[in-house]
Length: 413
Length: 132
Ligand SMILES: Cc1cc2nc3c(=O)[nH]c(=O)nc-3n(C[C@H](O)[C@H](O)[C@H](O)COP(=O)(O)OP(=O)(O)OC[C@H]3O[C@@H](n4cnc5c(N)ncnc54)[C@H](O)[C@@H]3O)c2cc1C
Ligand code: SF4
Image (cartoon, rainbow over all chains, first blue to last red):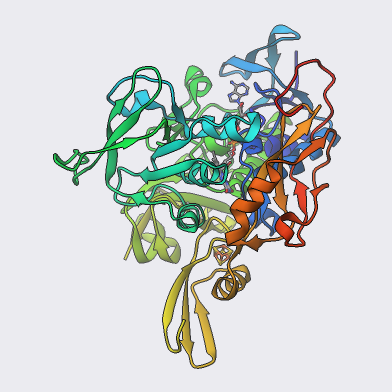
C-alpha cells in the first residue's frame, strides 16, 4: 500500500496532525484501539481545551470535536491496527484483524503514540503480589468506561494528575480514599488538580511518603507507608499500616517509543522522547513526532498545537517541499531547566517557535532567558515556575535567522 | 473575609493554575496574578458561592459502550456534588445518543440539565454489556 503521510496513533496528537496534513496530501491514520481519541474518552472530567476553544471541555468532548472533523475529511482511518515496525525510509509494517499483516509505504510519517504508565516494576515496590493493585489509568478506564469499581478503600501512591483525578473519582463513586502519598516534597500534578480533587473532598495529601510494604495473599489487605528523608530513604519508626483493598499507582508516564528506537531515531534521555526540531521532525528525515510521544504534556491544547505543526511539515515533506538545509543548532537546557523541546533549530521555515520547558526546582519571580553565545534572543518573566507545570516561551520567526551557534535556555531569579 | 485582609486563591479554571492575590481595602477588591478574565470571575465566585462542573457517567442500553460520560450544563454548588452523582448512577438512557444531548433534567433540584459529552452509536453485535 502507498500513501503520502501515515500518522501512527489516533489520540489528540494523531487526530490534529492527520487533519492538518489532509489539507494538502493523502493521509492514513493508524490506531491500535477500537476507537479514536487516545486517552481522552476515559478522561471524563472537565479541563480540556481552554486555550484552543476558550472554554472548558471534558476529555470526550474534546476528542469528539476532532473525531467528527476526521469523519468528514478524506483521511483513511484504520482502527484496531497496530503498527509493528517502521524503518528510516518511511516503510511501515502493521497488523489488523481484517487484513492481517500490511506493509505501507509513505513519503512522511508522524509518530503520535502517546505514553504509557509506569508500573509497580519500575518503582520496585516490595511486598506480596495480591489482586487489587492498579495503575491509575487502568482504574480510570475500569470505572469510566467499563463500569467496574476496583476497590472500596483506596490508597493512592503518587500525586501526578491521573492520581489526583482518580482520588476524586473514587470518592464520588462511593469509595473511601484514605490518602494520597507522594515521594517528593511537592505534588506531582497541577495545582488546580490538588485544589479541586483533594481539597474539595478533604482527601489528605502526604508529601515525602512512600509505600514500603504490601500485604495480603490473594487480595490486597493493606499497605505500610513511611516518611522518607531528603535522599528518599524511608525513616525508621515512621511506618504505619493502612488497611485497604485497593492500591492505585500514579507514578508517572513514559513516552511510548519502541517504534522510534527501532528505527534508529536519536532520543533525548531527559524527555524519554525523540529529539525534534521546530518542525517536529526527528533526526530521520521525513519522520515527525508530536504529543506525549515527544514529552509528557500536561495540557492537551499544547499537544494539538504541536501536532498541527508536525502534520503541516509532514505534508510539505511529502509534497517534496521539505528538503531543506538543516542548520541543526542545538537548543540546550541551562540553569534550572530540566529539558527543552524542541532540542534543535533547523531554521528551515520562517515561523514563530514555541519552546516548551520544565524546570528542576520551583522558584518565584524568575527571568527566563534564551541566548546564544552570550547574546540575548528573548526574555520572559514568570511569577512562579514549578516542575509539574510546563513553561512556554515564544521565539519570534525572525529571531532564528540571526542565530549562529548553540542556544541556551536559563531560568534565573 | 474581613476588611483589609489579603487572601490568595489558586484559579482552577484551566491547567495553568494562576495564584491570584485578593487585596481588599474597605469596599474595593483588587485582584492580581490572574492571566485572564476567567480567573477574576472564578475568584469572585469562590468568595461568594463555590461551584463546580459535575462530570460522571450513566448507563446506556444497547450502545457500543456500556457507559455514557455526562456533565452538568452549568456549574452546581460544590456540596451537592456527591448527591447528584448518586442520583445519576440510577439513570439509564437508550442508544444512540449524540454529544450535547440532554440526558437528565434538573439534577439535584438545581434546575440544571445534564448533557452527554460524547456520541454513542447503537450497537449491532450481540455482546451484552452491564449497561443493558
Ligand atoms: C488522567 C489524565 C488526565 C488528564 N487531564 C487533562 C486535563 O485536565 N486537561 C488537559 O488539557 N490535558 C489533560 N491530560 C493530558 C492529555 O490527555 C494528554 O496530553 C493527551 O491525551 C496526549 O495525547 P497523545 O495523542 O499524545 O497521546 P494518547 O492520547 O495517549 O494517544 C496515543 C494513541 O496512540 C495509539 N498507539 C500507540 N502505539 C500505537 C501503535 N504501535 N500502533 C497504533 N496505535 C498506537 C494509542 O492506542 C493511543 O490511542 C490528562 C491525561 C491523563 C492521562
Ligand atoms: S486566570 Fe486564566 S490563565 Fe490563569 S488559571 Fe485562571 S483561567 Fe487559567
